[in-house]
Amino acid sequence: MNFSVPGFVIYERLGTGARSTIWLVVEQATGRQFALKRVRRRPTDDDRFLRQALNDYEVSSKVSHSVLRQSHRLWRVRRLLQLREIRILMELVEGRTLEQVGPMGTHGLLRIFIRVAEGLHAMHQQHFVHSDIKPNNILLADNGEVKVIDFGQSCPIGHVKGRIQGTPDYIAPEQVEKGMPLTQRTDVFNLGATLYWAVTGKAFPTVMPSQKRVGGIDLVGPREAPEPYEVNPKVPMALSRLIMDCCRPNPKDRPAGMPEVIRRLEVAQHVLDKNGVTLMGAPTVNGCDPVPTSPLPSKD
Image 1 (cartoon, helix red, strand yellow):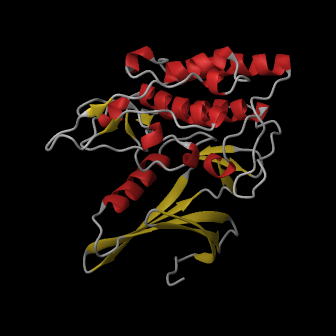
Image 2 (cartoon, one colour):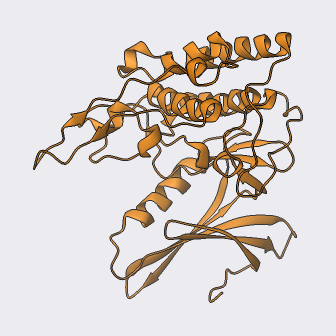
C-alpha cells in the first residue's frame, strides 16, 4: 500500500477488478467503516477506466434505494495536470457476488431477483438505466441483504451510446446495434439473461458483433435458446416464460418495466412455495458453500 486518504485509516485490500482495487477504510472522526475504490491510470492506458469510475460515482451518488450500493465521496488525483487516479468512498458491503456463489436453485434465489428488480425499478424512476446487470454485479451480503453494484456503464434513460458497452453473455441487442437508445427494457434483458444463467447454469445466447465487416458492425443472430424448463425441469413454466420474454430481441416485446417482472417473479415464487420444490441443488463453487437462503429484508 503506497497511498493515504486524509481523515481515514486504510486497513486492508478487499478485492481487485479491472484497473481497480477495493480497500477497507475507517473514518477517524466517527469510526465508521467504508469501502474505498481506487482506479489508477496506467501509462499505456486510455482514460476508459477513469471515465467509468467517474460515471460510477456520478450515478451511485444520485440514485437512492437500499438495494443500490451508495457512493459518498470522490477524490481526483492529478500529477503534472493529468488525471491519474480516482478514489471513491462507498458503502461497505461484506459478502460474495452471485457469480462467486454460482448458479443456485433455492427458494431464496427468486427473492434475490425480486430485490434486484425493486432496486432497478427505483433506479428507473430516478431516470437511469444500469445497463450491465450480470452475476458479478449482484452482491449477496453476509447479513442477507442484496446489493446491485458497479454503475460504470449506467446512463440516463433514452441515452444512445457511441460504442458497445456490456458483458457478452448478458448484453441486449440494442447495446450492440448502433444508434439504439437504452431504456428500462435494456435492464429487463440483462436481468433475464442473468436469471437464465442462475436457473440453468448456462449462458443465454446473446447477439454479439462480428468482425466480418470493416468500418461497421454485422449482427450475428443468436442461437435458438432452449427454454429454462427444458434445461432444468424443476423450473416452473411461469418462470421459464418470464425469462424468455425478458430476453426477446425486440425491446417492445419484453416486459415494459420492473413492476411487471416483479409481479411475475412473485407468481413463480408462489408456485415453488406451494409445491415445496427447489429448482436445483445449490452447488458449491470454488470450494465455497452457497449463501444462506434465510428470508431477505422486507420490501421498501
